[in-house]
Structure formats: structure tokens, C-alpha cells
Image 1: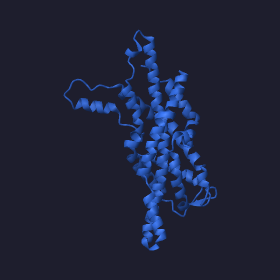
Image 2: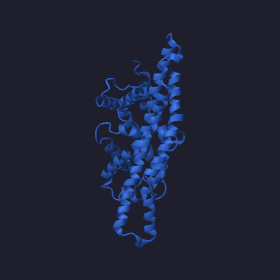
Image 3: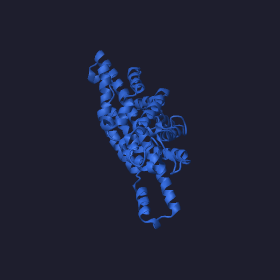
Image 4: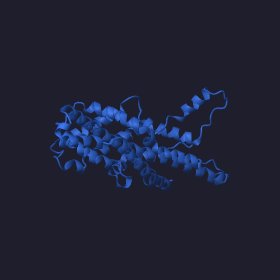
Length: 313
């Protein structure tokens, strides 16, 4: 079982996560493109009379909000996606291990054993793209609301050092995570509980036979239950803090235009925030933030327990 567990973790790192991360990074770059704002500001700098003072302030304020929104969306997305995919492969891997063991230990042939259908397996793992395909607009809108709330008292001339940057990013994340109903963010990662759809179909139909609750549905329900658990919420909180700590210590924030050690005006910090965002969502083998998450002891323990304690009923 230990060998199987380690192989499952490898599948997440080398197959599922790289594809999902690449797709997600493209979507974030498209949906939070800052180039139009920066081009207008550069044009205003080169042609002083092309923008009024109020227009410049409005553009800078939008750039401030969107720069932090893009950074914090990237932090949240890379953290949750890497954890979500690991939840998926551990749930699926554990079920496959148990089903295979049952088939081998029974009088049935392995081909006749009640294994999870391959189509259901692929459909289940394909949900790693749900965030990029469906959840991202809601995530961006809510994160922008949180960023606007936190940054409304931050002026462009205010000095930011490592402590202020760390506090600001964590405040935006905390504000987002506490918005709406508990675990509202799970809806950004996966479809709603399939049991709700099944019940709705049953109640609105004259058919006495309820819709089939498939193996895929069971995998999705189990995943949502894990994501909505207090244990997973704790792992998310620890992982987000680890990523923010690593980000603030990033060398890119210490070069040019002043140092965060002594403090630099927020206006000069924004271009560096924009530059650092793509590094948050690069492929896993080159992503220091994913490696940071994986090195957190609580994360490793959580997935060991998730795999080992999976229900076998």
C-alpha cells in the first residue's frame, strides 16, 4: 500500500497537475490582463496632456486593485488547485486499490469485479479544470471585492515593507475566505453536490425510479466532503500562509526601485507585483510555491491520513 500511495502522489505531480496548471495560468493571464491599463498610463506619461489628473488617479487606482487581485488570485488558485488535485488522486487511488484487492481476493475474476469505470475515472480527474473553465470568473469577482475593501485605505505614496505587504495579502485572502457562506469557495473548484441534482430530478419527475447515483457521483460527493472538512480548511490556511511567506521573501521584491526591507512606495511596488504573478502559476516542476506547499509537514500528514482512512464500505 505504501508503494501505491507514493505512486499516486507521483501521478498528481507529473500528469494531472501540470496540465491543469498550464490551462489555469493561461486563463488568469487572459482574464486579468493588466497591459491595457499600463499602456494607457505610459501613454499619459509620454503625452502629459492626454490624461487629466483625475483620469490618471482612476487608472492608478484600478491598476492597484487589479495588480493585487491578480497576485492573490494566483496565490489562492495555485494553492487550492494543487491541494484539490491531490485530494482527487488520493480518493480515486484508494478506491482503486481497495476494489482491486477485493477482486483479487474474491472468487470473481478481476475483469468481473466491480471496479470504478475508466470513463468515470477520467471524468472525475477532468474536474481539475473546473476552476479554469467555470469557477474563475466568480473567484476573480469575489477576490477583487476583497482587494478593494482592504486596499481602500492604501495610498500610492504609502510605503510598503515586507511586513505591510505580508499583512495586506493575508488580509485580502482572509476577507475572501470569510465572505458568504462557510466553504463558499468550494463552488469555485467543483460542481455543486450531485445529490441535489438527483433529488431535484426525482421530485420534478413522475418517474417512480430515482435517477442512478453513479460511481462518478460518489467520487464527487466524497471530494466535496473532504474539501468542506475542518481538517482541509486547516491545511488550506497553513498552505496559503506558507506561499505568502515564500512570496514576500522572493528576491524579485528586493531589486530595483527600492527595497521592501526599508520600504518602497506602493506605486513602485505594483510593477514588481505584476512581474511576479506569472511565476506563481508556472509548471509544477519549476514552481517553488507548489514545492513549498508539498514540503509543509501538515500537508503530507493530511494526505497520508486521507489515503489510509478512506471508507471501504
